[in-house]
Image (tube, rainbow, N blue to C red; front, side, top):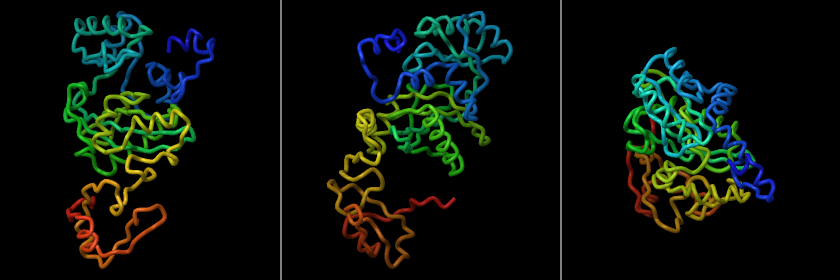
Length: 302
């Protein structure tokens, strides 16, 4: 960002590929991010961007302790933390202002105890978006994700909550005009449908590696191809198939297949034939024997 702001990239005709400098600014600059979320109606916790300790103390006195401190342009939450009193506030805020490249820290209402949910989202230059998966931190908001355990997919969300946050994540990545992968973090009230957007990482992050491992979707590889100009519909997954559902028949590597137990009541089902455009009508029992699958209760009936 410093090279962009100083005009060095333009001077030497260097072009950023993938996510633009403008998008990085809108996601990483605390005030710009807050303004963007307000523009599209996405809720954020009560907060104020400060550039000195005095302003931080003044704002905190209006909303009360504890507060969360989030420095701008740092990685992995460096310099941030939760302050429960003025002594902690001064200590954390001083360090956060020092570590922030622009000397900027967001002082935010603390919503510790809420669920922390993350969505891994991909978007190409044509505006096509997908959610790779969502993840749920075992620990609530207040414990940094780097010190917690994350589970994919989420274990305690109902369909309404899942779809609500999914829609929000797609709206955010589109408004920020991200090209590639990003991670959207939410705080969700465990007793209601109230949620707040915590932050967006406009890049492939630590969470992306976990999501790739859990889903088998090569996030870093796809993000690199998107940066080179490919669109999502042009990128083949590691299985050799166009992104989307994987056929149970004809896989280059035979992955374990599970069929919902309700299929046993059907005389036939229709599945992909292992090649784009081909489908097969087959007995569920015959399919199970053919590919070594197993029946289990996997469908959501809520």
